[in-house]
Image (cartoon, rainbow, N blue to C red; front, side):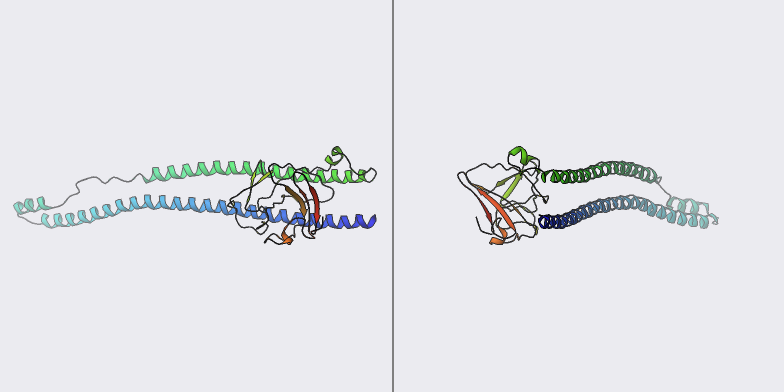
Length: 293
């Protein structure tokens, strides 16, 4: 009895370490993706601001070039007037004066100050709202994740208490007895064979005639129409499955290390040493492990 307990505890320790590492890796992947998304949006925003900057600066530079041309013309006119003023021939002075060029219009300055202020104020207010909204969302969702972690911890403590009680009671026999070990399971889309689709919040899976456009993933079953749940399990666990249709259903468990790629027995539930399955049809049920029924 002690050896069995020791063996189970060692398995639980390995499972906890493996599951924790998997959650840590998944959280790092999600946070990295979130950071990349924020950086991408930030880069696109900076590019839009640079484009707007080039437009406003371009308008100002066009006006500046025009002003510089006007100044150059005025300098030429001023020099010519200075030269004519020294002439004593007044008729010649009047004739030449008519040929001189003077600015014919007033230069309109672009409203760059208003544009810059409006752009700055609008973006500042928008980014401030975004920052507040993002902080609120992250705080709320992270609190939700933290609550989930705490609930799992409390559930683990409850499970340990239940195990202690089990030592003093008989094995479960009725559905009510088994329900104390009930696990609420959600399917993992990263493991699903392409000919399976989900519904009902990933609690229902259906066989399809056409493959689904799932991305490549090392955990995906490539040949057998199988899918695993997201969370691993340890100790006593109980769950219920309903199925509909003319075909049967195979419900099983496996080690995470079971192969997924290919159509061999090493990838099929119940047909290798790393998995067990209960295969059911309308008139028959049988249990399989390592190809033995």
